[in-house]
Image (cartoon, rainbow, N blue to C red; front, side, top):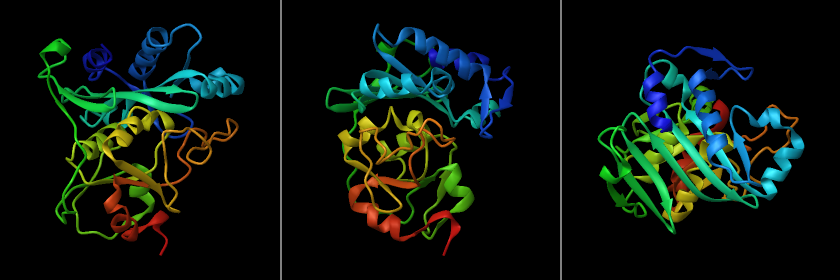
Length: 269
């Protein structure tokens, strides 16, 4: 339903700039409103990109202790607003500050990734007018094989503007963590380098764990499904609140050292 709404209004929608310089459209707000009223059961919490700042510090602290849905209504709003197809919708399910399950959809392509027990399923619909029962699907398996010099690497916007990557591989900067990480999880891309916020990755972290994909920060620290200050900025008074504490590399663990060795963080030699 969220994907259908977004696709129906994309061409007609206008955008504005938020205080952090990112874009927002009416569709972002509409989808977040829909999910905030349909997902949480009584006593559950909701962290959405467009509304969490208005809920206050006490609510945020309780959300990290209780059962909470973490949502990015449009991840890749810049692409969405300007008519590109590189955007998606992300939903994460968190219990006691630990992300347990997740789902993401890329409405333009009809691709859906969702945790299913201890596995991850990849559904594909020919069009969002069709029911999910009409989708083809496969169970994803951990990526194996050797590193390929011709394999695609996905870059985040922040890293693209400030970092350097000394590898011959082709690169794609999507502006959407959902699109970029879905490509890594399905084996379409080999690695992601960049930074993102909690709602960007909340639907994908539980999938990464299930598929043996690791995330390591610039200092070598490892991210996990635990939403703590070891991985995220959680100071609600900080403009960086909910952001990963630094740039990171996300890929098969065996490739981490290769990618890290080829990165110059923040453009510094």
